[in-house]
Structure formats: structure tokens, C-alpha cells
Image 1 (cartoon, rainbow, N blue to C red):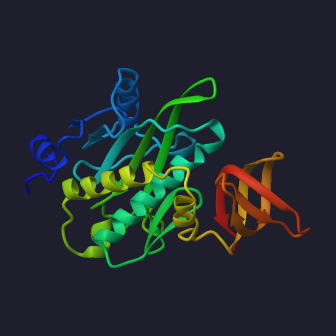
Image 2 (image 1 turned 45 degrees about the vertical axis):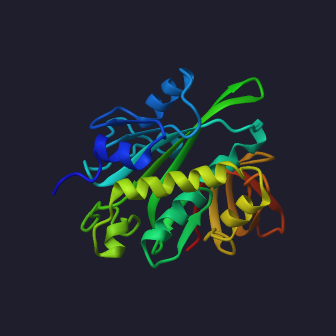
Length: 259
């Protein structure tokens, strides 16, 4: 099977967007950061068939076989302050969710804050990394790993991860998928601080209403929190009500459903 990602196809489909394509790379985020430092305009994208040093949240390794995923990093130059960085997470999650929905008949959910879920399993992860000069955002690199045709059958991830083609039962053209994803990123980049983005993200959150356990950083402290995920605020923080009716504002952390 001929590759659906080639420099020639990407140039034809993505033009006039600037892009860099690699057969193998350490990390698309790292290359995109260097490119942004050199002046790459907003919307420029780095993608690779294989990452040898890919990473997700909490510096976890993110890897995928050649030809099986979309591994991309997009340069953004948002006018935000440090309290609004979660907006980029929202942007990435919503853009991926809308893109996946355009290729499948299934509704796509988001597990707080940024794991995109298809049929209840993780189909994509998002890693925004920002460069600051004081309180001024110079750029954000929006890293996205999207499972397209990885077969998780009989693996340790079978119950927790999924690919788009597992659901569609037919091939997905990754170049067209990428173009759609970048269009949705462009769309929400122009609305980054809008109420519309927050609502689009919030209405997809599968975490809300669930009893959860969190190893969390909160606005007050850190540690273990157990309770009901009741809402999210405009800064993207998850609100958890514990058994004492205290509301904890979770800024970051690992959240799982209570059994």
C-alpha cells in the first residue's frame, strides 16, 4: 500500500501552509519549537511517520508504528497570559474531536482535560508547550498524536485505546485527515478566548457528573482527591466536590473514574 503521507501530496493539499515532514524524528514538538524560534508563522506544522522521543503529558512516552497515526506539532502564536494556557488544551481537544467526528458516525468525547475518546477509548492525546517572555506568550507548540490504524488487539492497551479505522472499518486518508484537523485548529485559534470554545470543550467532557479520584494539583494544594466532578471553570480547572461538600479546583493531574 502506497503511503497516504508524502511530501508531494502534503504540498498539494496543505498549500500555502508551511510544513516540515520527516520519515523519522526525535520529537515533532522539539523540531517545531526550534522552527518557531526561527520565526515560523502561526499555523506552520511539523509531522513525522515515526517519533523516537515522542512524549505525552507528565513526560510519558508516546509512540506509534510507521504509517499508523498522525504525529503532528503546530506552531501557534496566541495573545494569551499564563492563566489562559489551558485554552490551547481546549482548542486542541475540540479540534481533534470535531475532526474525528467528520470521519466517523460516532460522537467523540473528551476526558478532562485533553484525552480525546472514541467509543469510550483514547484515540488521541494533546501536549501544548509554551514559550514565554515574562507574562507574554511568544508561541505555543500544539503537539497531537492521533491513532488512525494502530491495532490494539491483544495488547495491554486493548481496553483503553482505539484507532479511527477500528471504528470506520475502512481506510482513512491521513493527508485529508490532517488538512481537516489543521482547518479546525485555525478556526478555534481565532476564537481562543471565546465563550464558544469553552462551551464546545465543556459539552464534550465525559468526566463531568462522574465520581472520580484525582492525583492533582489544585488551586489550594496538591494530593489525592476523591469526589464528584461537578463542573469546569473558564480557566479549564476541574471542580470536584468531596464527601465534606468542599469544592476543589483541580488545575492539573491524573483523574480516573472511581469504581
